[in-house]
View 1 (tube, rainbow, N blue to C red):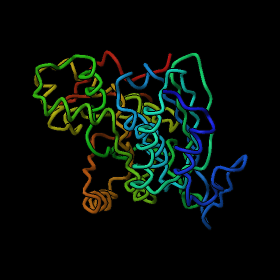
View 2 (cartoon, helix red, strand yellow):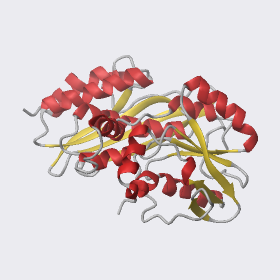
View 3 (cartoon, rainbow, N blue to C red):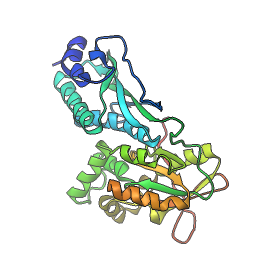
View 4 (cartoon, rainbow, N blue to C red):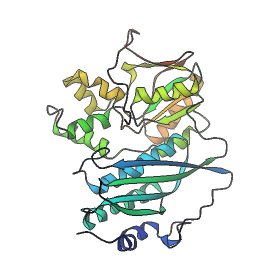
Length: 325
């Protein structure tokens, strides 16, 4: 059963703004936000469309959490701590109140986990597919934000966590990798539906990393963005790219999944560069967070991204990453 706009706001959205500084109880036209002293604001927006970024039968709570987390991942990539978010929801007429209630339950769970709250937004109806947009706001010490444009020749290339799980999870949901054990399939689907934004890691890299971004469109493609705007070349050692147990099992069954691992996207891990003498600081950060941080290559003079095997021979990829056509 559907619910009207104002009833939806009062019943499901206003509780998400309760006690959030600057939200004003969602009773005014806009929010008021004071940046912390000595900090500058970081703003990011992502949109998700039914049938493109999530599947029709994905759990609504996890859709909400993914929407928030992909934005938190952008904040993390710049070393920012989250402050609040704005939500726009264009709902199809058939969207039920039960679906919306579960969606808001997912937001509430992640608000508690990541220390962020709803500041405002908009809700509308649409004859098209359900469309979601979220703007996240964070803060970083003034002048210290991590950027894509500051990689230098001689830097090591690092990533957090493991690579390829999200893309492989989508393949599982689409009926691929049937030969994998159920536990591995479930783990990959979980990583696709519920990415882990590395907020603490991003903040910890301020003052250590030279350049950073999160991996959303694929490791090779996103590293290409850093290389392009920094005016450098990048070399990835394929054997050094860390894999989860489930992803390694998928590659053992079908080596053709290599392109999905290196270029499939939906990882939302941090990709960063740092000078070689930063390795001890990065190791200490990894130990403190309990999060693997792995060196996978190097920045060189030149242009472009090369992926090489253990012998140094270049590996040709059919697909470097996802693009929005």
